[in-house]
Length: 182
Image (cartoon, rainbow, N blue to C red):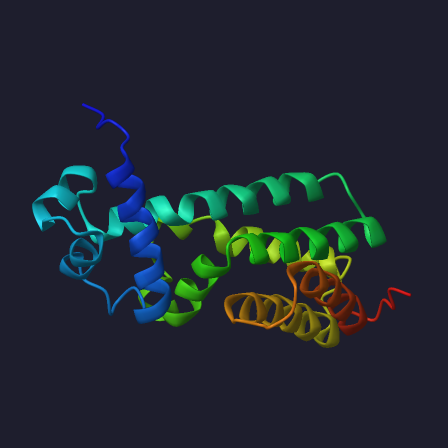
């Protein structure tokens, strides 16, 4: 039977994401989450059967967004695909900053998590769009640099307004890939 939505459920998710982003997924226990939320571990387990279930729910919207970006790129080629890939990825990384931070902190632990199943294939297609399908070393390395730099930058606390951050991330990614945005 499905459990009813509640304010407590939302508070659990929000608090868990904050804890995962500051302490890491591995460094956060269900007890820690319950303590921050102000409920018992049993109450927390009423809504989520495990810490992994909380993580899966937190990562699902980001995964869906990545899947939607992948679908948008499927009909594009060349410069259109590159710009859409960069802009879409920057927007996703900015929207899901804390989730990206969680992933980067605990990559070895989370790499095999079921919620991330399709991510490697989608990221490979995203990178292919960024380099127009090129497989030469320079293109591959620059695509990895863009993916990594955008992710790490969005996971950090860069002290600039979001619109400036977005503009500079897109501009820097285009420059890195050899496409001067000016």
